[in-house]
Image (cartoon, rainbow, N blue to C red; front, side, top):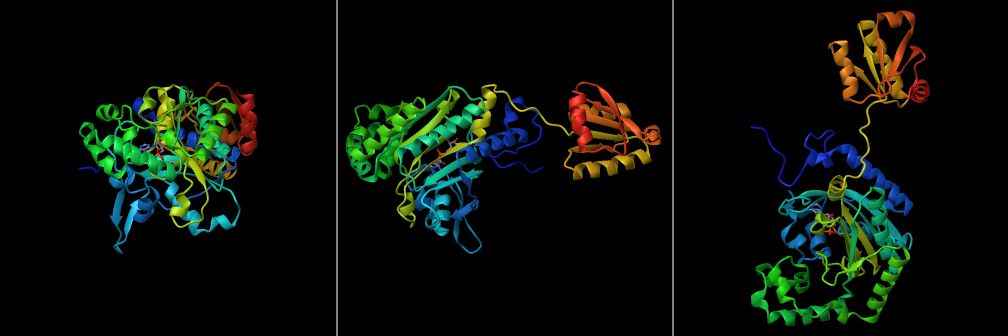
Length: 433
Ligand code: HAM
């Protein structure tokens, strides 16, 4: 019996037969990754890479024990030295750990870091939700200005628009600072204690550990219990209110429209002030494309300097799936520049050596080595979408010349076999198009 892939994971493959799963094709991942690299250059971010596993304690302290991610979804194991390790469920805590360990604050006042890579959450797999998924994210450390919050959102909008996504919606809220949140938490708890019987089983537990999480429950009974509940905005201090107003103002300056959602609290415990999520169309309503916000106290909680931070992550699977669902134009499959077909031993040797020389020049070359008939060899040229084909037999070797054929236009041109190099193929690209 063959061994299958673990539940909630997937392969990224060169070709996908199932039209529903085309988002798994590697050319689309590369296309998205290229767009991301252009974006981070434009906003001047530098890359950070951290280990895929960390000490479990980092996430317990960084993300928070009462969050679903830490309490239910972590892939935690003991290593051979009996130390508890966890596959990273997100990167913000890891970036903070690396920042503190590398004493990066001593280098310069502001740090703009980005990352791309796999994350792991043991959640119930469903459309758009995986146990191994991939995030692109950024963290800005050392900047407490509202402009920086808005740049996060602007960055995501620029990326999504460039990819052709439509119906983007920004959901925004402020969760204040720890002091105002503590006051609100008490008020909410007091209010809900009287309605405990109405709450879902999960929310009964949340009421004890983290009542704020009840706000973004999906259960109708929890919504009903929240009717008339105190609102966080009434508990905000002046500084937090002012920060949020500035964020809204700067969003307007960039022409980015927003929905303020007083119930948006996000699932991770480190947020302060601005929090946001971006969705795309109806499908996005349950599956956010991205989430982020400010986390001014996190670095200090983890033993680092007291510097503010803000960031976001976007799920690459969800972005690709939304691109397909919205029928955005996708990059064409790219074949090799040249397919060489040698007929007979001498010609095959010519092709073998010529492929070596052209590849050294950086040309993408494929050689057809099979013993199939010429017709079938040519079918292979179509199949791999080669730009040019060169068929060489004894006759051509004798004359020292052969015809290069452009597969799309079906036009051809005789070339000198010895002189075939990168520049000749570049000239032919124009001549035979
Ligand atoms: P998050 O909201 O947990 O935030 O995840 C961010 C994004 O990752 C989600 O909007 C979604 O696109 C994707 N995602 C999350 N879980 C899954 C899953 N199981 N399957 C597929 N995609 C998923 C964070 O991770 C924070 N670290 C974001 C942040 C950075 N806040 C500040 N800096």
